[in-house]
Image 1: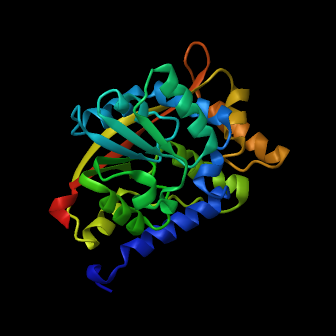
Image 2 (image 1 turned 120 degrees about the horizontal axis):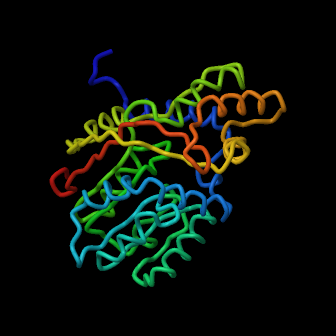
Length: 281
């Protein structure tokens, strides 16, 4: 088989499905159904402000721009973006995330943000979006099994630019899963698809995107070990005291003290991929 014979969208799907089997948590949106977890996610994002700055400062924003934020979460980007542009539409399927985003927008006096509570794969651009949009952003929200179809829908909804942000290599949280999964579940942990596969999917679609990488620290803070165990119990699919003991021992060995609690930190490579839609049609 030659490079040209590879179906990169199938490669993406296979890696996505193998990772989903390990996660065992169904749709990504189901993880964030609760308001409490959505609040915790927003707080965590604020602990890593360089990531938000990196995304926003790298976008071609104008006062009159219209922006579509796909997988908007609790409004980490959508709310500050609304303060810089004419209007923002946020697509977010998780009920908890939507509730927290609405609160976040209200606190900031934001009135030009519209939220569509659907998975991107369920969106009908003609009836749901009110586009096209000058700029489409999907920031670390590419948990989509058919990435080619997702990108085609993004291009359809854009009159200008598409910006995707994703990961290269093993992330800090994946490394912990790679380390622990054999001990917890007796099998290897399979990582999800990364930016190399995404680039090849785009290239196979006739899209020749710009790419930029940056090394950035990711930090998670916890008041104590118990809070860390509670945070990771569901994520690591802990169902027995023996498994919890393995997790607790691992966290005690890997978390570092930060004065008023503990933290888990690690460097990772983040990738910005962007293109002008008209130039690729």
